[in-house]
Image (cartoon, rainbow, N blue to C red; front, side, top):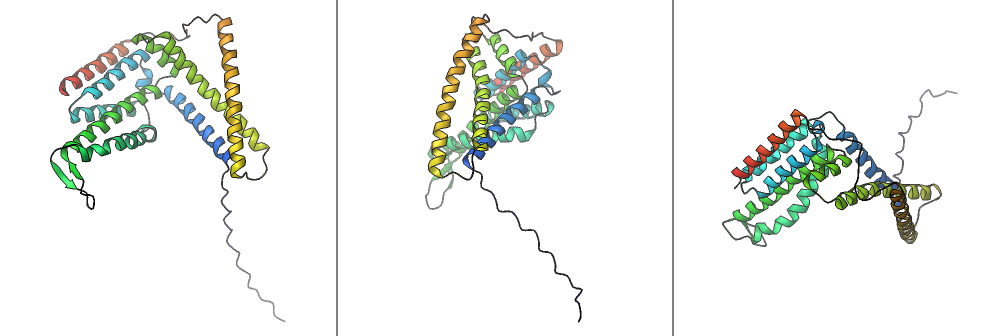
Length: 289
């Protein structure tokens, strides 16, 4: 009797079946992702970059001046130059271009492009091309109008996001008082910002507790019932918490004005940066007339 020395080749490992995430799992993942993005923005605001080292009042006034100059400019080259300035500021402030692309550029391009698309065809002017089958004319004036709108939105949104990413939110609110923004408006912004995080945390805790007690997948009707019930409970918790927070603020002496422990103090570099921002905005306004 002969014994074969050949061995059977091992089978390749079978790939596990893809698990389709349930409604609860997707909700928890999205809430966690939103909170991670907020924490990332807080870490970026304390990085050792150019804008992070400037006084918040300088950033609010200077970047707002650049946004106004971009909005009023009638020269496309000037708007693109301001966009390049925003990119340089992002590079010097250690803000990744990927963050700007995912948070601003793609969304602004899709939203503004949808609005600007009809202008390419309905704006009268020199016809450059006609779409086949439809025969719609693409005019030079229409392309110019769409380019102006998209470039303005992209530049302004990039500058605004640089302000938010490179400055803690409490400092932004306090710096708004330089522009004589009403105290009530500043308080509403601050409380809304904190309530959003509290709402996200509460919602994530609710869905995680639901997920830990859930066995198997839910059908469509059950998912809708869970969603509606969670929204009702979350709204009830929010209303009760808002009343408790307001009473706690009143008992601690809150009468409308918000005070922080951080005191702003202008340094020579802040004055130089403010002068540079205003000079650049004035030059862009003059060239873009």
